[in-house]
Length: 215
Length: 215
DNA sequence: GAAATTCTGTTGCATTTGCAACAAGGAGTT
DNA sequence: AACTCCTTGTTGCAAATGCAACAGAATTTC
Image (cartoon, rainbow over the protein chains, first blue to last red):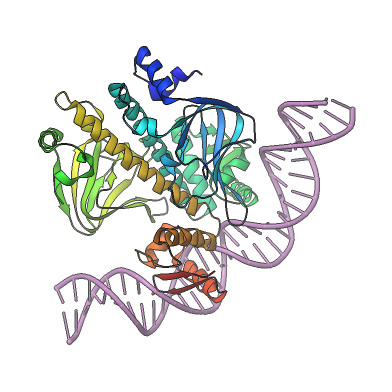
C-alpha cells in the first residue's frame, strides 16, 4: 500500500494529494512482531495509520496483566487524540502483532487548517470523521458484549453478531480462541468450560474456531 | 439552551447560522422521565442533540435485563450513524432520565454538502468530528474499566479515573451507587460487598457517594 | 406532611469464575 | 527429525460473583 492510497486522501485530486503529503510530513516505518509501535505516554499528539499488517493497542493493568483495548489492521487509525482521554490513560502502547508498516503524522496537520489546501483539508477531515465514527461503532459493539455479566451471555452476544455478519448460523472466528477469551475479558479455561457446557446443552456445535448456532 | 448555542454551530457567523438552521430542518421536542426519546430500529438516519436534561442509550438483552450502553447529557449527540453498527443493534433505544429537550435532525444534512453554505458546512463537520472523537474516548475509557476481571479492579480503575479528574484523592460520584453497579456491569449487592471489603482492608474510605482513595 | 419511590446497605446460598497446572496437537524452523 | 512456540482442551479447588430477599435512610411526589 502506498501513501497515496491512504483513506485520508480519498476523493482528493492527485496534484493536491501530492501537495498535502509533503505538507503533512509523513514518516513511514516498518515493525516486526512484538516491537512497540508507539508509546502514548511520550507521543500524545501523534497519529498513526496502518499501511499493512496488524497491531494491537494494549495497557498493563495494576496486576500486570496485558489488557488489549483494540486490535487494528490496514487503514485503521490510532492515536491518543483519537480515542484516549488525555489524562487517564497512562501506560497505553501500540504493539505489532503481524509484520506491519505504519504512516505517522502529527494530529494538528489534520485538525488545523493549512493555508494552501483549504478544500482538500475539508475532505480529509470528512474522511477522518468517517473513520472515527466507525471506531466508535466498534467500541460500542464491544461494550455491548462486555456488558453481559456471564461468560455464556458474552459468548452468545458475540456469536450472534458474527453469525448475522456472515448471514448464516455456521461461521469461523477470524481469531484464535485464546484471543477470543482476551477480547471478552474472561479466563480462557473458564471460557472453554462454558463452551463445552453450551455444546452439551445443545445450544451450539463447535470444532475449534468453527461455531454453529443451533436453533 | 437555544438552537443557536448548539456546539454544531460553534464558530459560524450569526447570519450563516440562521441560514443553516432553517436548512437543517431541526425539530425540537421535550420529554419526561421514562419516555422513549428515540427508537433506532425505526430511525436509522436521524441524529439527536441534547439541549437540556439527561438520556440514556439502552438495550434489552436476551434475558430481558436493561443494559445501559451510554448516558448522555447536554450537548451530547446520539444516533445510529454515529455509534451503532447498522446491522446488529436491533433493540437499541434512547430513554429520558431527566426531563429533557432534544433537537432532531437528519444525518445527511451534515454529511452531505449543502449548495449555499459550503464553508459553514466545513466548520460543522469539524465540530461534529470533535464530538465523535470525545465519544470514542469515553467508550474507550469504559472498555478499560470493563476489561478488568474483578469488581475490585473495575472499581479501582474507575475511582482512579475520577480521582485524577478531580485532582485529589477525595471525590463524590456524580451518580448513584445503583447506577455505578450498572455502569461497571456488576451486581449491586456484590459491588457493595466489595466496597465494604475494600474499606475494611484500608484501601478506601467511603460514605455513600463520597469516595476517598487511601495511599 | 404523608405517601411513594428510590437509594443504600446487608446476608445466605448456589453458581460461576479465575487460577494453576498439565497434556496433546499443529505449525513452523533449523 | 527434533525442537520450539502457540493453540486447544481439561481438571480441582478456592475465591468471587450473582441472585433473592429484606430493611432502614433519603429523596421525591402529591
